[in-house]
Image (tube, rainbow, N blue to C red; front, top):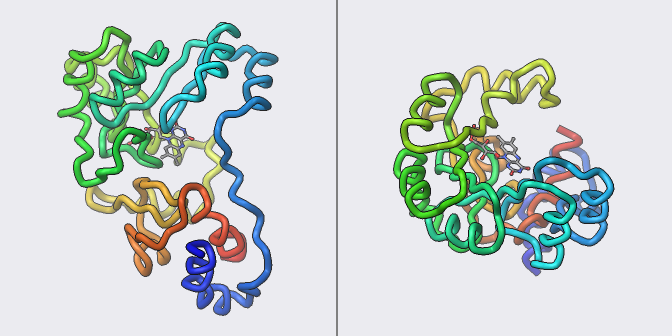
Length: 231
Ligand SMILES: Cc1cc2nc3c(=O)[nH]c(=O)nc-3n(C[C@H](O)[C@H](O)[C@H](O)COP(=O)(O)O)c2cc1C
């Protein structure tokens, strides 16, 4: 019912782009880490496997570790960092609220209570024995130095790489990122069903940025697929 309601809310955009709102869309292609993906890890033996939204089932995680991979996981609050360490993560990524993309939150859904990196990082460093990687809003050497001063063993940079030559983001996205300022992003759930930080687009402005009507992750993305393709 929720997905039908979402589809109905998006129908005016479908009409505007000359698309049939009743036509079936390909399901969003994000699936939990499963048997097939685990078999791929065992075949390719990557040095590192990094999980968002918690960790897979213990049996699958054991197979990942047995394949020799260092396991990393994102924590958005101290409680999640402790949980990840207790459940087998070798490295904890402390993801501050500034971070672009999806929030890795999995023990909380309190978006308004997500701490920024400067508050989160030292508390995670104090709470776990595992090395901690800092993520969120780091874009140059000053940010890296600050993260190390707060106890990080490494940093993870996402958004700053989106405009590098190797990135596959569209010219439109590059232009939007080039014009973005400190207050240009919002937390939204309308693009996928889970909270994520991004520069507002029309759907985010019209229907969100947070909407209780968005289908659960990843199904909010399904009905947006044809619109994205057509746009
Ligand atoms: C476009 C985009 C996509 C992302 N996709 C993933 C992902 O698939 N898995 C993941 O663990 N983190 C993902 N991240 C989050 C980053 O790992 C990291 O938390 C974040 O980029 C750090 O903050 P920054 O973007 O301010 O550098 C993504 C980030 C962005 C900007």
